[in-house]
Length: 545
Image (cartoon, rainbow, N blue to C red; front, side, top):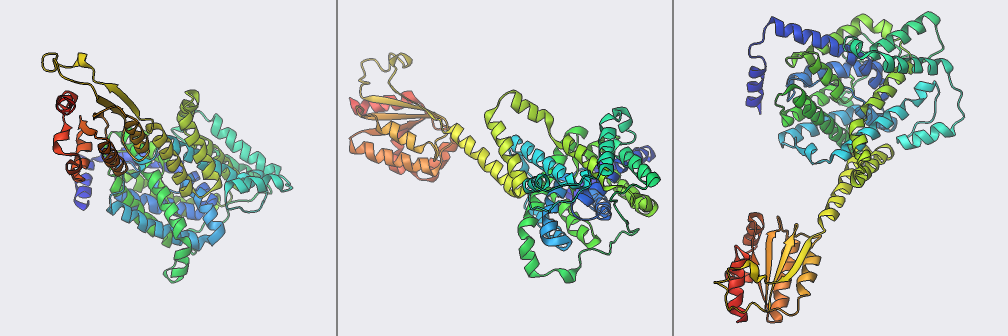
């Protein structure tokens, strides 16, 4: 993997010149403009601070960006991660978040070493879409308090948070609501052409900041942002013990799973946009190293960010220097702009996150599955989305995948079985002229023969009572498992009690390999296995003659 990394770096910077650097520099500035308001917002929404969000973006940009599996990945705090961290923060505090983040980093490194980078390809698209929509709801619900300028009871899930919000007598801060709505309208109405130059989210925060500084409104603000890269509140080696590790191990697995899914999906999107290769396993190691380091600086867990990555690519990014340059510019913002950023109203950040949550939804996919009325896809989407807002995010993914698997099993369990007499019109008339083809039955199968279809297969074959030879045509069977193998063995034993013989024909290679592995020829006899049905019929005729 190290040799592959070195080779990729050489290819990436082959022919790199001043013009290339200028393109990376401009792309880095553009990404910074997008990342700055999001880093502040996701830092606060995760339960930590705006400063923690900035530190996360800086370390991610430098460390993960340098080691990334692609030249285009931009990592940092994300909405998906903040959704899972806020519940963790409420239960274990910042120390729990840091330790879980470091453990998640180790898990990601192990996942990369064991080459688990393709795991995302096994998750159905409707499940990912439902998961994304669920996270979007969690983000929006988590910002209700800041958006309306109120305070309600904390909750361990978004579903309970909604119940608390609507069951609590509220005194809305109309200034906060006004600022939040103003930012929402700016982000919606800001022209797309200008958004490529200055992102609407940044304009919204600047306008909110100016209004607050002029009118001194009674609003909650971000507060002091320390002008340092290593925060006073950070993970310390002395605070780590076996008890807290045991407590946050499950959340750490959730963080690692989310980082894996988000980062690899981002890599796939970026790979298609830029037309470059992407090493998924190296990306996992990069995310692991970054997430292990970040807590010791006071940051929160990070993932690759699709929005920032796509902005980088569209801005003409050439190399991974864009990620590192955007980290440097964010670093400068801490030292130069922190007095101003400390006065940004929290309701304006809530407005940014409300719009971000809305745009996170994969509306094109949602419209497609609902407009085409794909019932299976719709059910996968809804179940995963509801599980995401009611349960742990990892549980939601597992529920979605398990439900999808069950639907798939049910769908392919409809094996087509056809039992027929020998069709003499399809045989060589000269070769079979005068042959006795009575008492021969041919059974045709279409579909996989596995645990869900084994019982049906067994019942259908054993229902044949008036045959001396039963030929099982397996050409339409792409696979067979041990449950079906056991059923086949039982069928052979039972029909032989009736003085009937079983023959197989048309075995596909995968089926044949399993039969060979199980020494099936010894049970059935090598003389009863044929390539084609006519060969089997010819040998069957000698039995019934």
